[in-house]
Image (cartoon, rainbow, N blue to C red; front, side):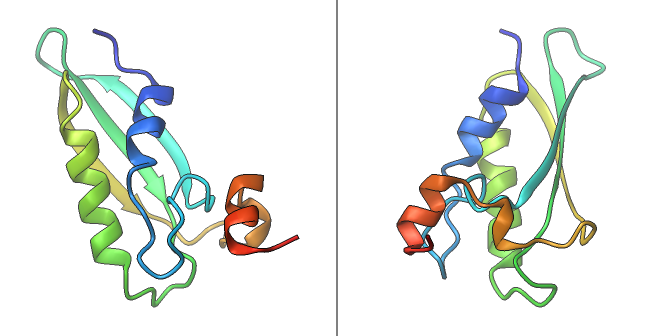
Length: 106
């Protein structure tokens, strides 16, 4: 089964920011999802570049750990790397309409 960026994105929608109670995809924290073939047949490695709402986000380790956990459970995933980037900096403009509705931002 081929792993797609969309299937990874759907899986990491299960990762909920514990302070805002919105998933990290709708918050706009995920910048890059790169799925590459692994050195084993029918396996893939996944690189995720994401940011935090602030450089000192206390939930950072939890969000990284859950992202690795959920993506690592996808059939056919061999390795998951989550890289935290601060460029470009996160702003509320990156949130989806669903996230804005959940947070009451209009």
